[in-house]
Amino acid sequence: MINGEVLKKRREEFMGMLHEGIAVLTTSKHLARNRDVMYPFRPGSDFFYLTAFPEPDAAAIFVPGRKDGEYLLFCREKDPEMERWDGRRAGLKGAIEDYGADQAYPIEKLQEVLVELLPEYQNVYSQMGRDSDLDKEILSIVSDLRTRSRQGAKVPAQFVHLDHILHEMRLIKDSEEIRIMRKAAKLAAKGHIRAMQRTRPGMYEYQVQAELEYVFLQGGGLSVAYPSIVAGGGNACILHYIDNSNRLNEGDLLLIDAGVEIDCYASDITRTFPVNGKFSGVQKDVYEVVLKAQLAAIDAVRVDRPVTEYHDVAVRKLTEGMVEIGLLKGDPEELIEKGDYRKFYMHSAGHWLGIDVHDVGDYKIGEEGRSLEPGMVLTVEPGLYIEPCAEVDEKWHNIGIRIEDDVLVKRGGPEVLTADVPKDVENIQALMAE
Image: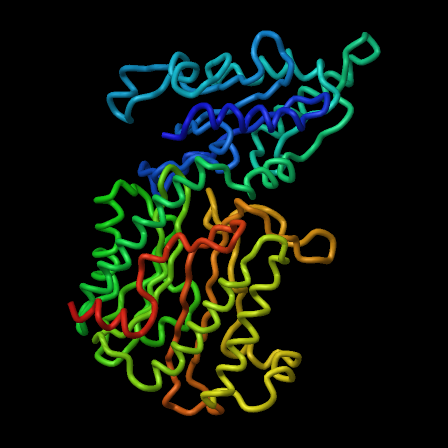
């Protein structure tokens, strides 16, 4: 469980940015998978960041300076009969004692409390468009206040979207977040290592997925961070392939892109390796191009450099490498300017990482890439994807390679959180030979 003092400091920092305002957030909806079967519940990321409250049907109100309590948590009440069917609930007492709320109310009281509190504040901070039910409640209350304004009813002056405030906070990880993300990275790395060791020709992709996710569950990672990609052969050229249903063939490469969540914080690792444990000459040539690009891009993840720089470094190294091995022909600078590299590399070199696997936070300030700061965490994941086509020699066909690590921005240089998983050719082959 996330440290309560850390959460309290987050809430204090958050409320310090609410100018003459009141903030309202709700968690995710608990959605039906089919008929009366529900998807496993996962709390909303922004809501969880401030509360760590893991249950559905919950909301929070933040009212800085309120004498009776600044942090109000709304949740389901204890109900022994329902808990027998669906699991234990924190209840109102747990909301205060275990989750740090100053006051706790039944979720059914949310509108009633909003009616009482909204007239007292100039600004209403919320995430309009995220929860239509909450939007309707707030708009209905404000509309009613406006009709009574001639009788002296106070009306909030403006609505303010919360995303910018919260997402800028979430972009810089505190010590507790970094501790959890290191743990998630270590567990994900163990899963990838097991997958490498267990993979053999003739297995199915889903069998390798089972080996990987077995480690996640055994280590306490009760949820994957996103659907695992286990893509053999040409399937690796499909960037978000998740069928995981094909047989693995002798001579093919296997791309695995998978991560685990710990306390809702994601890890995100990609490794590509030969199904039979031995890279062919052509596979090795392409793999080394991607690896050199990744190592150079990681080295560019440094404090005060623009976040866009490491992508540019990756593109340059990939293009130079493709020319060197004969996959592209021409001057690398001209190929980059014309965008010819995009035939084989069409995505960004990475993304922010945190409570969401594609985490929040702006990449640009105005027109410029924002400067990297200590505490930011991002992925570095260049790749090459060579689908069969007439202009490419058949020897390259169906080679898809991506190498991805999670990187913490620190003074003195980047820290690779996922470094436990081998990624150079010799170490991968040695691990698989074991």
